[in-house]
Image (cartoon, rainbow, N blue to C red; front, side):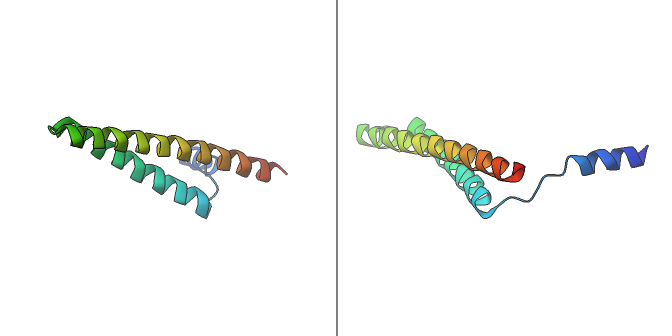
Length: 85
């Protein structure tokens, strides 16, 4: 039974991430953290200028996150195409 489990684990092994994939994953994680921080700051802001600041920051980070996700999908698609050829 253990041999069968080991076989399944080997079958699901993924190829190592490229530098670009690692970079994108790190940037996505940092951007998610920045979004959470901006939300927290926004919820605690009282001054109108700070509220505006955090709204702009949230919009900026959300657009960056969207861009990084689209880029990661494109890189993954490109890498899948390279592996097939």
